[in-house]
Length: 219
Ligand code: GAR
Image 1 (spheres, rainbow, N blue to C red):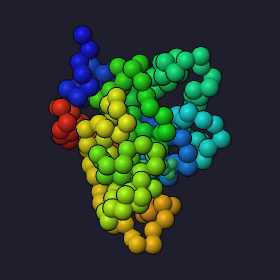
Image 2: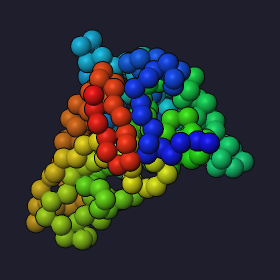
Image 3: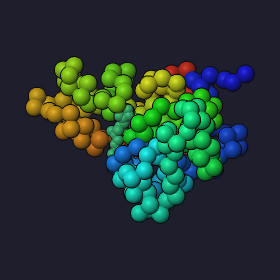
């Protein structure tokens, strides 16, 4: 019987068949979070290698950033498959080919499914531009403005079967200004988000981590 994702413990690389220090990053858009990771990996002391960048669409700046950095890329489009399950299984196999220790969703605007999570559940993280559990989904900054909160931020979490519901790795707060637009607020969040992502992905990969129920502990 498969263990629930929330009780998986990720410390043993041999058990996951992964290559230590290796990550795969999935993107859907402009890829500034990816760029922050690419820049960080230039320093060997960071201890992380981006083996590949995948996307659910072509012709995006995120893929161009990867190609400019000499990182292999792949595209897996939902529209090219008969079912969402077929897409998910193909995405999982494309990621698995690179044997990543950790999968990083950095602005990847698709929900992964059972096939993906059965292989990478417990070792896939996602970054979200709101303070979970508030404002899940794809319009986090606009939803925060609409609600009238005075503080929002970003959340790095371990992906589970829900929408932005997984165990929380890290969060950073960002003030909301009276004259904010969703675009301005999102850009300020992303500045903080990139630092958080680089910091915690590095620590998770270098040190290992465990997930027990909703608690994520970096070794
Ligand atoms: C980031 O702010 C990320 O949190 C968000 O998309 C942006 C991607 O920016 N993701 C979501 O909203 C997912 N719910 P980037 O492409 O410049 O890295």
